Amino acid sequence: MLKTLLTFLTLSGTLSVCKAQVNAALFRYPDVSATQIVFTYANDLWIVPKTGGQAIHLSSPSGVEAFPKFSPDGATIAYTADYDGSNSIYSIPSTGAHLVRLTRMGS
Image 1 (cartoon, rainbow, N blue to C red):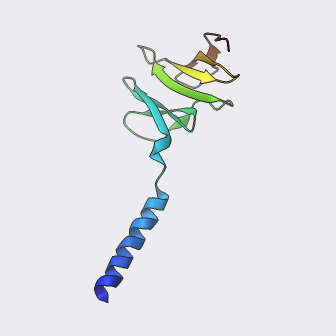
Image 2 (cartoon, one colour):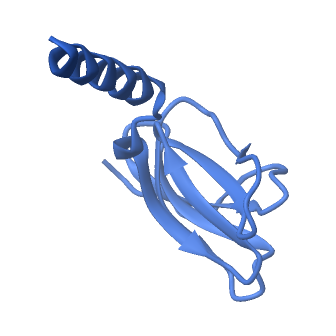
Image 3 (cartoon, one colour):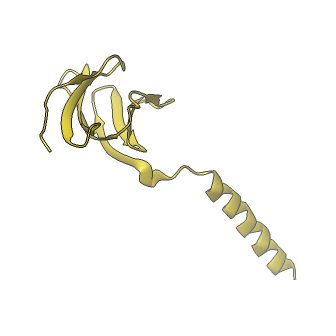
């Protein structure tokens, strides 16, 4: 009886911890600069310091953003996005200011 109760309490604690975890399957396409990490989460761009801390949401237009890559100096991030039915390449400063469309792909 005691063994069954301990097993139940252990499993209950494990299940409550599992419910609190973030779905890591949504973290995709990381790239690393000298000081930061950029990645997509739920089809938006996020950036976080390499030393840890809170991730900052860089972009959230309607559409899918993928494959972010830092410029060699880490000042800008190029990425592919589908905002209008076709993939194009965009650029955004790593500080999260205004994005710029670099290409126009036809459908």
